[in-house]
Amino acid sequence: MASRSKLSQTQAAWLLLAPFLATYTLFLIYPFFRGVWISLYDWNLLAVAFNPDAKEFVGMRNYERVMWGKDITWSVLNAPVLQTLGLIGVVLSIILSRMGRLSRFNAIALGIGSVLLVILPGFHPAEGGRWYDRRFWPTVGNTLVFVGFTVPGVTISALVLAAALNRETRAMSILRTLFFLSQVLSVTVVTLIWQIMFSPRQGLIANITETFGGTPINWLTDQQFAMAAIVIATVWWSLGIAMILFLAGLQDISKDIYEAAALDNAKGARAFWYITLPNLTRTISVVVILQIILHFQVFGQPHLMTRGGPNDTTQVLVRYIYQTGFRDSELGRASAMAVFLFLIMGSFSIIQFVIGREKD
Amino acid sequence: MNRSYYWLVLGLSVPAFLWLVPTLWMVSLSFQPNEVLARTTSSTFFGLIPIPFTADNYAALFSFGQTPWWFMNSIIVAVGMTLGVLFVSTTAGYVLARLEFPFKRTIMVICLIGLMVPEQAVFIPLYTMFADFGWHNSYHALILPRMAVPIGVFLMMQFFKAIPKDIEEAARLDDVGWLQIFWYVMLPLARPAMMTLAILTFLYAWNDYLWPLVSAQQREFFTITLGLASIQSNFAQSEGLGRVMASGVIASLPVVILFLIFQRYVVQAMTAGGSKG
Image (cartoon, rainbow over the protein chains, first blue to last red):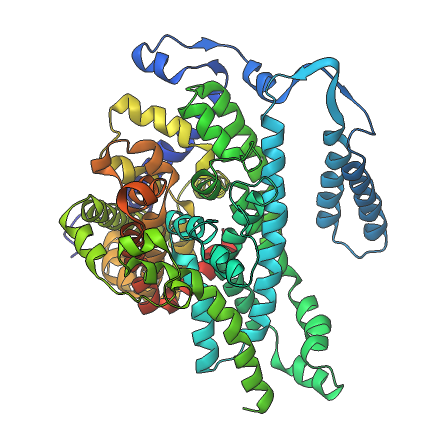
C-alpha cells in the first residue's frame, strides 16, 4: 500500500467535493443570479430565443410594472381589518416581550410581521390612478388566503391525530399508515382524484348529496367554493408529513410527566392541553413554518383543478409566474416576481433556521 | 389494553376510512366499464365497490396510449436522479463531516444559503440555460437540475458525523488513503442513511411536476406525473373516465408499494428532512 502515491487530506476533500460543487454551482447558484439578472431586462422568451440581442436593459422597471402603479398613495383606512390586526400584533409583541413571555427573536419576528401588516395593505391607487399590473397583488392575496386556511387546517388536524395515534400498537400503526398514504401520491394523481370527487355531475360528493336530497355544489366553478375545494384537497394530501413530525416530537416528551399528571387526574383532553401542547411548542413552530414555505409555492392544485379560476379567485403566485413566463413569454417580469417569491421564502427560511438552532 | 383504548381505535377508524375513500374510489372506478361510468359513477355503494367489474381499462392502457412509455420515462428519471443525488450527497457529506481543509466554513455557509432557494425561484433561469444548451426534451434535462440538493448533503453529513472517529483513525494508522477510507469503510456503514435518502429522492423525482412541465414539451419525454396531467383535463370526452383512473392507479403504484415496504425509512426521511431543512 505504501508504494502507491496518496492524496493529501485537502486534495481528497476537494476531489470528493467536486461533483457537488459542480452541480450546485451550475444548477442552483448560477441560475439564481441569472434569474436576478433576467429580471433587470425586458426579455421576451420567443424574441430572445431567435435573436439573443433582442433583450433590453430596463433596470428596476419590471419590479415597478409588477408591484407599483400610477398615483399610488397610502392611507390608514384602506384595509381597516388587516391594519388593526397588525396594530394589535405590534402592541402584543411589545407587551409580551416586556413580560418575558416571548424570546427576543420571536418578538422581533412578530413585530416586523405586524408592522408590515400595518404598512403594506395601506397602499392603494388614488383617484385616477391604477396598478400597472392589476392581477399581481390579488394573486399574492389569494396565495396568502390559501396558506392561511391550509396551514392551520393541516396543523390542527395533524396535531390531534398524532396525539391520538401516539401508541405503539398494531392497530395504531395501521391507522397511521392509512392517514399517511395520500402523502406519497403525486400532485397530478391528487388533482385527478379530487377533480372528479368535486364534479357536480359525476362526483362522489355530489352523489352523496343527491341521495340525501340536496343540490350538488359546483365546487370548482363556483367563486365561493373553488378555493375551499383546493384547500380540502391539499389538507387531505399533505396531512401525513405534519402528523409524522408531531409523532416524532411526541416521542421526546417523557412518559413520567403524563403519569405524574394522571395522579392529579389530568387525562385525555386536559393532559393534551396542559402537558402535550406546552412541550410541543418548538415542533409546532417547525411544522407551521415548514407548511408556510411549502404551501406558499402551491402550483399544481390550482393549475390542474381550476386553472386559476373562476374569475382569478384561485390564481396563485407560482402559477402567475409560470403564465407570465411561458404563456405571455415575459421572462423579465416573471423573473421579477420570482425574486419577490424568493425574498418571502428566504425570510421564512431564516426564521426556520433560527428556530432549528434554538434546540442545540 | 382497556376499554377506552378500543373506543379510541374504533373512533379513529371512521376518519381513517374517510381518508382512504378518495383513493379507494379512484381504484374502484378504474375497474368499471367506461360505458357505465359515462352514465353513472355510483353503481354499487356510491361506486366504491367495482360492480360491474372489468379489467379492460388496464388492458387498454397497455395496448395503446402512451402510459407505459411515460411510466418507463419516470423510472429512468427517478432512478437516474436517485443515483446522482446519492453520489453527490455521500461524497460531499463525508468531506464536510470528517475532513479538514481550507475554506470549509465558507462552503458550509454557501450550502446553508442554498437551502433557502426554492426551485420555483430558479425554474425560469434554468429554462433559459437549458434552452441555450439545446438540452430540453432529454433525460438529462429532467435529471440534472435536481441533483443540486443541499438537503441530501446535510442528511449524509449528519450521519457521518455520528460515526465514531476511531474507525477512521485505525485505518489512517495502517496508511490507508482517504478515498479508500471513504469507499471501503464509510460507505458500507452509511447504508441505512443512503437508503433513507434514496427513497426520499425517488419519491420526489417521481412526483416532480413543475420542472418536467417546463422542460419536456414533447410527449415522448413526459414523465407519468406530467402525462397524467395532460390527459386529465379532457378525461370524460376522449379517454374515458375508467381509463384515466387506471392511469392514475398505475402512476401511484410504484410510490405506494415503495412506501408500504420501506415505511420506516420514509418516515425517518420525512422527519429528518422536515426538521432540518
